[in-house]
Image 1 (tube, rainbow, N blue to C red):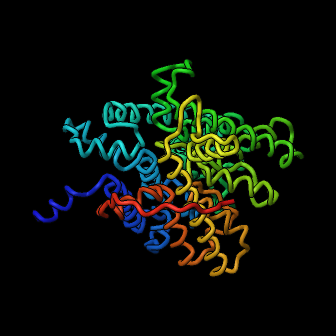
Image 2: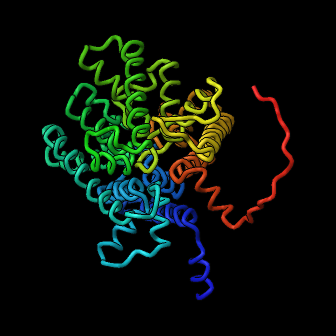
Image 3: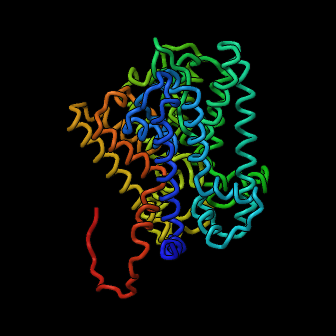
Length: 445
């Protein structure tokens, strides 16, 4: 026992984050296997329970069983709890329980909390965690209250649960819905394509959850004084705005041209916002053009922002790469954003992250396409959705075999915890070699 405790003390922050998510996924899978979790009262196969648990804990939204018709009220409650914990982060939730119980937070725990929410430093991390928990529940409650009249009008008292479920799912960028019926499986929010209340509320919840906890804190501290924001907050807000407006304009002019004006605007913005990385849809994704699906794949891979409920390579990663490219074009040594120089380490990390995501995204699709005999395009859409923790699908997920499900489970897990986190966790014990090899130039491009 003493030896185990000794090892536990030497776990790094990255290893704690990885093990925390893995434990959450496994616990969720075991609970979802229970007969009480399914409507038919039978044991759910482990692979299906594991897939659902991973998708919920990693706030993805890909499913192999329709949430509303397959899972019981208990099963749905388990799923939404997994989504809430996964969205906030296992470490953040554990820290909040420690705070509520009056326990002191150790320096190691503060360091882990810092890594979990991508905070710049340990100072003020406990205060920030409390702010995150309070703000999360307030926003989710407001979202549920706004949508409740619409759902209650359509579904009666059941609408209360639907409003709460969809509010949490949207804020956590999960994409799970409980709209399915035995005659209409996996519908997402297609029946509310022209409902402004549901559309606007879901979109706002997705964006607020996806811009990151530190950005909220910056907005709370500096209000409307944009010039006083941290450089990262400025990058996140501007990049997010561009990634909403530009794709929405494309969808408006090139995709949904046969719709009425109001529906066309709502649908364009919704399909622009949801790939980063919410997983809801109001339009029939399979009926969209190949070009529009390609745009959505790019948006899925980009995802949300650091320290948020969203996945993907992150908006800041893309911004850093573009800043570096512009610096190269202008023959400047250092890339800049908002009058600040970007450190070399950030550029290296950005390049590595994008390379890892592309390899996972393409490699996973190649294997699934080979194993299942499916078109590569549909498989690329599926793996982008998984590694970006989005949850959008062209309808092939429920039909996939066990091998393909395992691939998607792995991609969802890696997409949520982050590829670099996994590498740092695995190589934490590696010795650092300070010696340098001789340098030699190599031509690129």
